[in-house]
Length: 246
Image (cartoon, one colour):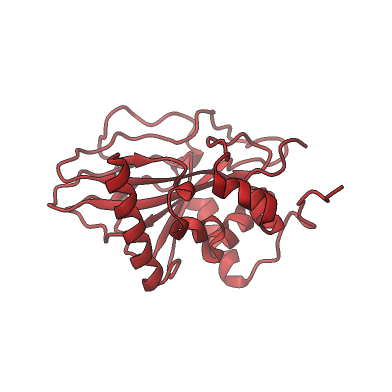
């Protein structure tokens, strides 16, 4: 019987750089990762996302890894996955892989969190928080005109839901990400996309991760997922939900 792809150690050894990033993330609920993807990868992703958008004609695309093989490397992209494992532990599974194309004229998003469960000041008994971490690879430079990612640093610890609409917070921060950077943030962090007042689309690939014992949003039943579950590395198998039950 084939051995399940369990990791040998839950907590990886951290370099000083990644340890600093983890500390920053835990305090503020977000992190900007420089040099997350190369210029060649940016170009490839733009081409793949343009083709996907043209084919589907939808603002949101789910199960992105099934759309084009050029998205595949995002599954376990080292600069991001190393930090995901440093925060969540090595038992990491993909929650979802999506893209969003924000057209010119689209209005401000409302404040929201990406998880439905409440936050407790004491966390959970066995340290299961954060439960979900999102990662955005922005393929267009974010500006005040085409719409920044707006966050409230530290709000992932707030014991109440974000307000309705998109009122201003004194401590809110507009993250003007550049192509090549990745923005990772706790699913409980208050966040929203600002209005696109430019004449061009705003494009992003979103890879979301969680601890492997949580339920994922995507079924992982397409050809890419099946191939990874059967032929991938142990890490890739776990990311695609190969461990169906514990």
